[in-house]
Length: 614
Image 1: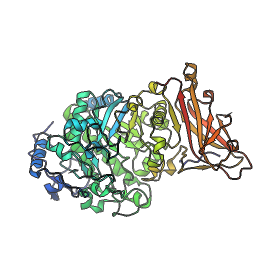
Image 2 (image 1 turned 30 degrees about the vertical axis):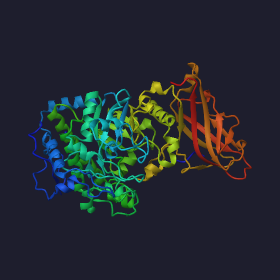
Image 3 (image 1 turned 120 degrees about the vertical axis):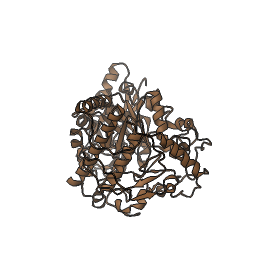
Image 4 (image 1 turned 45 degrees about the vertical axis):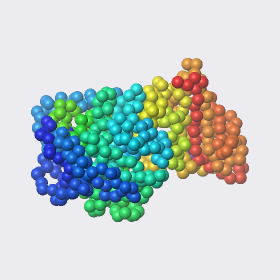
């Protein structure tokens, strides 16, 4: 029995950007310049610059006039946003830009580090990253300075394997932690439920003439690090029903409930009620305007369109589970075409290419079901960097790598911490190393990390070098992150082609019948042994309803393992390195007949310890 699977020239400065226009505009064609229009409504400065709710916490005690003045002076130095129609450069100039863009796409990126902006949204004392200690335990810094902000996560990056910083300051699709002409500035205080509201320093930084994104850009420029703005295309933290959700709800969504998947509290087939429907032209227009504003406003190297935050993207899918239609896929492709044209014009205007990265599920079928015609996007060169997955694999990394490389697009698979139920399993250094090793062995161009914020951790000096990893201890597992993370957002079962095994996805064993479990191992264990660094390898199976280790026969690649030891529900075997190969290994488990109850296999791990680590 096989373990089951489920298959864009600076313009004269503006006087101020302390207002925001809300528009209802239909989407125009790729080569059509957006027509001059009168905004349907002028939103008040109060709405832009102050939180619409404070989650029970008091507002920062700073005069609003001073904040408006600072925001206006900051914006005055920024280039004017203007319509983006077809590129007006000679073909030879555009071709030269595209060649430079291709070269830039293939620069070395050992690790792409995604920073989700929580260093500004949950500001803490210097060095006290919120992910290293609990919110309640980390003392808040008394003074907001650029140095204090950078010290939390960004300052430690030089000297690590992090070559690219993707800074994300999107808050629930409609708001950002930077000045904008077309979106809200998010200054709300967010209650994380463990000691009161956080300290959001966006207001203070803007009053000082900067912003989290601007500080990240300046730091990267000083240190030779590539910098992207990462835009979450459908963030739904405002709709998950958590203690912080109401604080994240954007005014855009409050004003336009007709653009959402549903009403607060609605239970959907997939996703959450606060998701925006990309079938609506106004939603696609707003997404485009936000992205264009960032590309014109900031000196970034590229733009990430994060489609893993969060599926689905069409109301029809969210409500009924019905895959995106041909029309809906065309609508999303139209948006990508507009973005590509805009970024090319922006690149021509500034004399330097602007890259586009996309993060999507690591399955062509899953992408199509969600409205992403990824193969067409590649064929039309609508993006430059492919980032696969969200830590949970649906297909072998070799296939994702081959998909990108067939179009000369570099590929960076994603690794991330596990969901709570798998936290102790998938969030260890040894587990991260194993995930990274398999990614490198698959031929990927580098590693993309998500929600892994401890830049002082040694793993950021390990994961970007397969030669270093080859000498380090590891733990290989199936479903290390937690497959249920995917299923929160869309139906991945038809596209899952890898085995999953966890307490949430157990595998019952049948007496006298063999269950086969494929496990990919990136280490060359036999080679290590021959080079004088023999590893100690142990296979551990978590089995329920098994009283005696003799009740189970286990083989690896046809070699029967000796008698295992059973303790606290884990059956452990010594494994000769010669029994394992680099790549896919076949583990088989067969219960003997006569057992009172059929055992249930709930987890598996292959532990590798080197005699001399590092």
